[in-house]
Length: 137
Length: 99
Image 1: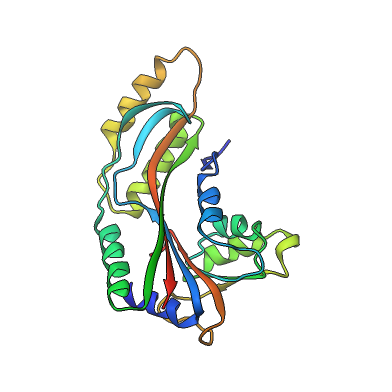
Image 2: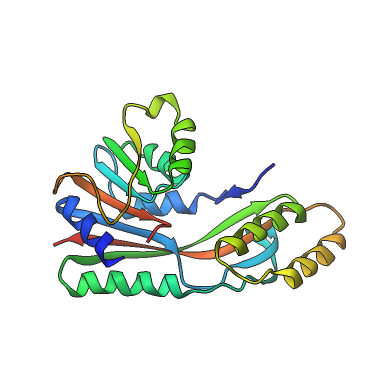
């Protein structure tokens, strides 16, 4: 990661900006609804080692004098799905890509809660995002 | 309807706050299927060079590129550890979901 950041530094003009946009190192959460009408079903359990490694790489290039941190933002990002089947597909892919144990209990909890709804509702996976702006030195 | 990513558009709103994009030369390192590339293209940069190591995702990104962006956006297979560009040519480098 440090090498990739050094490459970005090389191709940037003097005073150019590096933008680092990615999920913050926190477990995303599954809930019913979207926007303000969102109710937690439970968290997705993730391995956050890569996120911490990325944080360390950015800290390293700042410490080495390649970049200066100018701004930092945090916001919430939702992935919205229509029904539990779509969530099941999404989570199966999510688990496979990250080599995680399957979220069987969480999906069962979702299906029980969803079955009790009086009318169909959206389902969202919600997580904090991080955006850092760094200036080339 | 399939999965909808960020319907509230918090991501693009934050990118707008983060930098001045219009007229800028941008390199997107790790563009995937080009989802975010298209959002950035709407902010009127002069050009976007978008790359990803996954050739299949780059093909998909090219296929999904609207004609109106074809002069300004180009996708390439490439790796972040060896960028095939001369030094000092971009105003903005973005790692989006890729660091």
